[in-house]
Amino acid sequence: MGAAESRHHGNKFVIIENQKEHDGSSIVKAEIVSSSSPTITKKQEYKNIDNGWFTTQSSIGQKISIALKKNQKAVLYHCDNSTDVSKYHQSIMIIETLSYGKVLVVDDTIRYTQKDEHAYHEMLVHVPLYSHRRPRNVLILGGGGYGGAIIREVCRHANVETITLVEMDPVVVNATKRHLNGGVWLDPRLTVVTDQSAIKYLSSQTSTTASSSSMYDVIIMNEHVMMSETSHDPKKFCQLTHKALSTNGILCSAVGNFWFEEQHITSTIHRYAQQYDMVEFASTSIQTNMGLLLMQKGPMTKSCKTPLRWPTSKVLEELKWYNAELHSSVFVLPNEWKAKVDEYRHRFIDNVDDTDDDEETLRCFMKECIIL
Image (cartoon, rainbow, N blue to C red; front, side, top):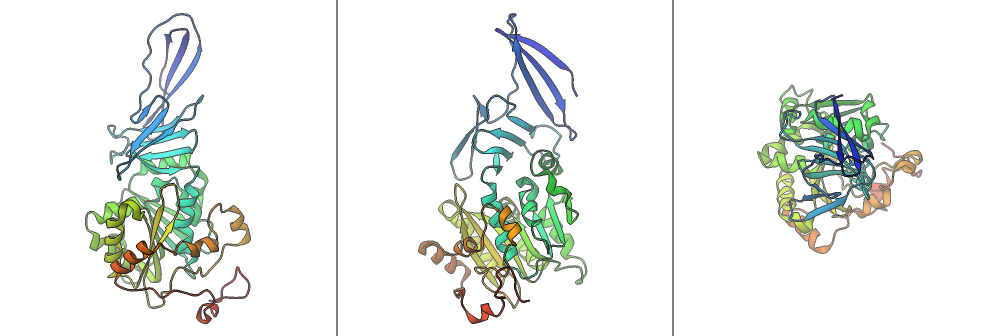
């Protein structure tokens, strides 16, 4: 803990204390008590925070402002990109807000909001996992920057045997462990890989012998991984994800929304349709709408529209957003979006009727059971 200093300001007495975190970043604490000796004190200033509001600009030309929580320390964690704390020079901040609870900001981009993150993460995780008959090995690319929520949702699946998280910056992981969803990091099935990009990790895994490659049943990645990796070598990244999947495996990626990112979504659909046996787009909802791309590999591919497994009653009680009915509904697209998806994947996915005989042969009459 650093030295404490005290200064007077007007009729208030401010005690400022610098506290060092384990990873070298610092947190400033301030306590105000009565005093009568005036002097000037320099307040801790943070980028994007002004007069009790956090403001950032999104990539689609919108400014987002969120009010900070009053009467308590609003900045829970801060690591500036000008310091050597993060060797990847990322700016990392966790703030306490009035309406959204804890918010994780990485490089001025909001990655996690406590109030509504479940709507994003439950769909990102459970749509692909419940669309797979036997998901045993799961790979998460970039989940550390999302507050550990992707890990939390994968951990709800008792049949999953291994969970591998690849996150470039260990500072993001450490900040998340301390302030967000800390308990999920203790799951014995979890392996965390840091200091590797997604494409570097996939390259190392798929360059080994044939018996050790194609090991993941489901790969989940967030929008920022998809956009950053595809900006360098999109074709290679697509090929590596395909090679890393087991037969009948599923790749699921968040891709933003059609209103503002149509070009990115359609070009991604076109690229992955050339490599994968089936590509589908689903539209779920957070405050700005979110799209999911689901890509399947193998001869037994079937539309992800109908889940092949269901949450147990215990898991269903824990979930705030996902259910089987919502699962199917997110694949129902507006005409304009559906036409775009069909155009760029150069194929049409036959509609799957829930009462189809082939589908029913896979299912038991009990809702939480499936015949494999």
